[in-house]
Length: 283
Image 1 (spheres, rainbow, N blue to C red):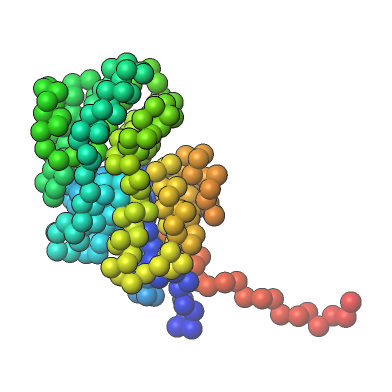
Image 2 (tube, rainbow, N blue to C red):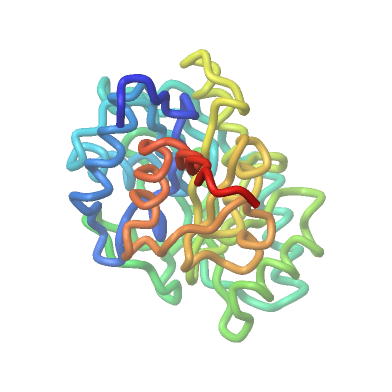
């Protein structure tokens, strides 16, 4: 990129799973280089993920990431360089218990997991919940009362027969006035505080950096990224993104395994294509 070419955005917001991370959980050298080049050109990078801080910070540490991260579907703003939680919003547990009971009355028993608040918050998992592999241990949830014993950021739900889309849809229809229900990834449907979105946390983090929506390009792959796309000036969906996100995206890029973020950033770093010179041939 020439010195005269300015990167058009001051803030790059990236989801993690299915977006910045490849399917093997790593970030490619090409994507790391593109983000470093964009940062060198004056942009800030913010990770915006549904993962809670305990399940995000080991990834950020591996990346050498020192900036702000928005975690827990927007509930948490985390300073990776200082290993410090700046803001955190929790579920109202009484309302969540009512909502969960109401949903189970509608669809039958659910498999449950829950994310406790804090830098070291445990993830509780019931025996019938199919949990994703990760580097941190789960805490078995064998006593229903333990679900409500400490502050929670979110509750994860699974149904024996309803798929993710159907469970999310019936959840919104049944308990949408009490809490929000979002799909964050394959097998990951979450109950979160009413009104909370990734855009909530991103706006708080951006304000700390003196950034605005007009300064921001966002990358994502799932329906929980829709509010973030609505907040940012430009929303870019990965090729592997859910159809609901693609429908509202400003642009599409390649998949997470094909360096979709790097492809877009490299194009922006190279600047707009130069206009062709007149041929000089009379028409």
